[in-house]
Image (cartoon, rainbow, N blue to C red; front, side):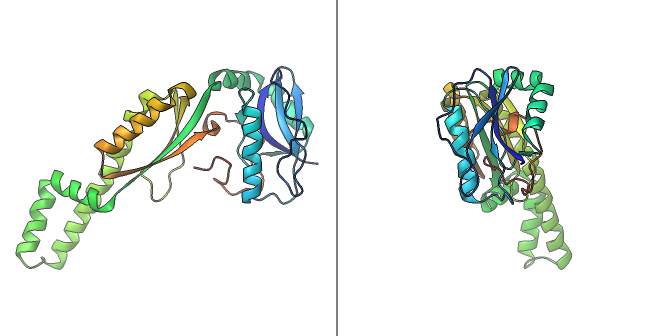
Length: 256
């Protein structure tokens, strides 16, 4: 029977609530495997595991229950090992890494920040900041719209300026938020976002981080900032004890 892994804790972590269940239909009992100073919160893995809402919530609930009693290194949804022995073997082999991560992540949470441009606002900003674009746009206007080539040239200039602004804004947002975080992890690039970054933040300074986000919103009205959190610190744990099995990329309980 394959083993589903929710998270990793210290062996000294308080016992889980009796009767806790996790993923699967019917929900499968959660148990704990130990190796040295570490423990893994696991259950049997259901067959044909898919990121259904019920199972995603079950994964999150197990981590929330376990995390209420102390630090847990959260595994992404769909982390399946061949069997219990594989899990305990990995705990032994990677003990130094996991113990260091437990120490580093204790009392911390993750906030994922995505940024995108407000289209009309960024076009106005690009026009205001680029004299060449303004000049060509005005010349086209005065000549009744401009020739086909002039229209193409203007479009290319605007597109290039917006692309450059994306890189500039991504670097600036990260630099503004990074001082309020303990660590930063860049997420995968995806269409529609100029920035996808996770920040590791101490629980007791989370208000400072969120205040920095609000300040950035106020000073950058041409940006849309989406914040997801607090989350278990998924982005700061790797490597896990197994690869996610049968789960599409990004389909994790802490999906960004």
